[in-house]
Every structure is written in C-alpha cells, then in structure tokens.
Image 1 (tube, rainbow, N blue to C red):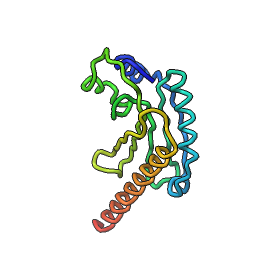
Image 2 (cartoon, one colour):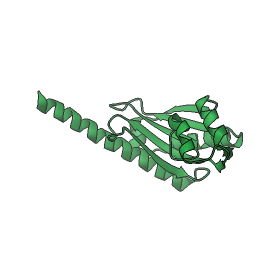
Image 3 (tube, rainbow, N blue to C red):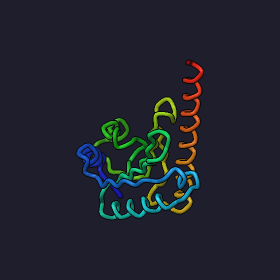
Image 4 (cartoon, rainbow, N blue to C red):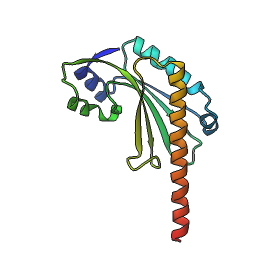
Length: 158
C-alpha cells in the first residue's frame, strides 16, 4: 500500500489504524505453531486491501514475564509508537510503500527491551511467516535466558 509520509504519521498518532490482538500460548510459540501468524497475515492483508494501516499484537499470556510481538505495516523500521520520528528519514510530502515489521517488546530481551525486524516488503509469504516465527521464538528464548539469569543473580545477592 502506498501512503504519504505526513498521512502515515497523522494516522498513527491519531490511532487511525486497524488493531487486532491475538494470544499465543508459550507451547505454541516454542513448537513454532504458525496459526497465530497465519491469522495475523490474513488480517493484515484485509486491512491493507482496505487501505488501512495495520497493527497485530501477539501476546503470550502464559509466559513467565510480559512479552508482546507487534506486526505493523510501517514505512521504516520504527514502531508505531515512534511514528513522529519518521520525519527524520523522509520528506512529509514523500509517498512510500508500507512494509511489514515485527517488533518484540520485553523487559528481559536486551538493554533496550525492544527489537524490530523487517519481515516483508509487501504481503507475508510462507517462508517469511516461518522466519517471523523463528524470530519470535528466538526472542522469547533470549528473554527467558535473561530472566533466569536475573533470578539466579537475585538468589546469589541474598
């Protein structure tokens, strides 16, 4: 979908985008069950076909810590939360294609508690869905490892 940069910023800041929330169990994530991503793909394609920006939030409710994944139809590798920073990279009048990005937000992921990846230039293909699941699983495992280390350090401090 093509969009003017100024329109993109305005729509995101005014929260005029389609938002869908999905839950995925820790087991489905670790077993790389693709149902959540296939559901997200279908929803994103529907939103983009209607010329709507799309954000799919995938939450893992049974994780040991808060972790959320965001599939967003953005124009640069910045989450919707940082939409106003887009002006640092584009002219307001420029028109550009949306791409699909995966953001991971978790306190235990890394120092910034955040990671973003370009997933697709347009619509999610099967290999891109598999790659997205690989990233989600890897980010969860990294977060779990860091979470476990924190617990061990706290026990040692006592």
